[in-house]
Structure formats: C-alpha cells, structure tokens
Image (tube, rainbow, N blue to C red; front, side, top):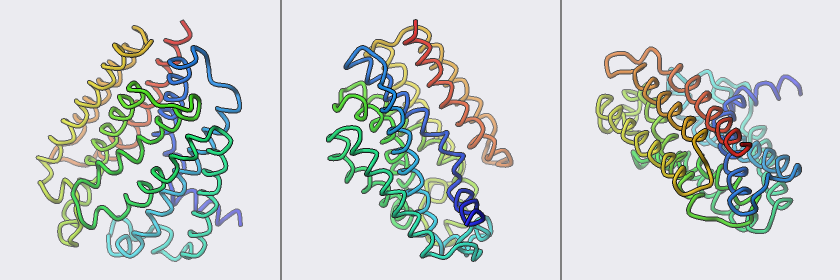
Length: 287
C-alpha cells in the first residue's frame, strides 16, 4: 500500500502543488482583508489547504487516466505509472473519487457559495484533459482551471466575489497558460504528428514562445492593477516586480533553438514565483 501511494504521489507530481497553493492562500488572505479587514480563521486555512490538495490531486490523476493511451505512445511519457503498468486504471479511478470527496467535504466546511461553485470547478478539472484533442487553446483552459485556486481561496474566506478576485484570477490564469506553453514546446513535434493540439504544435515553437511572453505580460499587468484596486501597498508591489523579473528570466532560459532548460523554467522558476507573491503579499498586509 505504501509503495502504491508513493507511485500515485509521483504520478500526480504532488510536489507541484506549490504552483497553485500559494495563490490559493493569497486569494484567501487578500479576500479576507478586502471584505472583513482581518486574517482568515485557523480552520479556514485548514479546509482551503485540503480542498486544494483534493482538487489538484483529482485533476492530475484524471489527466493521467484520460491520457494513458497518448502517454504510452509518447517517448517522453511512456514510463508514467499507468502506461508502464505500475498502477491499474481502477486504482487511479479510486484515488480520483477519494480526491473529489476530499474537495467536496472541505468546500462544505467553508461556506455554501464554495459548494455552489463546485460544479464549475469540476467541469474545468475534467474538461482540461480533453482539450488537447480539439483546440490549441488547451493552455488557456489549464490556466482557468489553476486560477480557480485563488478564486476558491477568496470564496472560502469571504463567501463572495469581487473585481479584485477576478484580477487575481486573470493574473494566475495567464501566468499558468504562459508557462504551460513553454512546457509544451517539448512535445511540439510529437503532438503535431499525433494529431494533438497545442500552441507550439499549431503555431510553431518560435511563435509559441512569443505568445507565452504575451500571456505573461498581461499576467504581470493584472498583478500591477491589484496594487491600485486593493488595500495592498508598496511591499506587495516590490513582490510583483520580482515576479516580473522571474518571468523575464524564465523566458531567457528557452529559445526556439535551445529547449534544454525547459524544466528549470517550468518547475523551479514558477515555484519560486508563487511563493514570492504569497510572502510579499502577507508581508504587506502585516505592515
């Protein structure tokens, strides 16, 4: 059982929860200050964390289950747990059910708006894995799916939504879409030959990297806009500038002629960026 759990956690890249969880916390903290003028309650932190773990675990496991046949044919992904025979589809399906149960129970512990919005979240969690079969905009769907995290954090502590929440949603959605485009450059040739859709396979790697830059520019501007529309101050703004510098550095690591550092750009830089934004936002609100 322990071995199976380790394989599952590796399959869903559990450690990459660090991409979205800080933004879920950021949404929770900022929403609580905007609406209530105070910090989230201790149990709200707990239930938001568990809801995020459940949502992301379900989404990643669903992606691996739905894409099992595609992964088996792709040299880069053929050693993943399902195509390699390390996990059965029934085992993965059981994990998905448990993950969704954790999400639903955690949302119920927060407030009814969180419960009412669950079908929207689940719709995008399921939809994303199919989009590469029919549209190059699959990266944007992933962005929307990940950006539900800060919206969920906001709703979890406030039971409401405001324009500030949607600015944060836009920033996270396009930040995610941008780095997913960069990551997808690795499979551009395979996707094209297999009849799968992505921005790199449809537009070519050079244009895809330009599109990723455009996504990140708009994401950066949305984070700047939050400085003017919310109670956040200069310490937050410094965090935004650092995040912008990280995005610039991320793009400097890759080019149409050299994709050898895609993993550094995708994993390391984006993990750092999300933590920077959370730390500087909390630091600003502590002033």
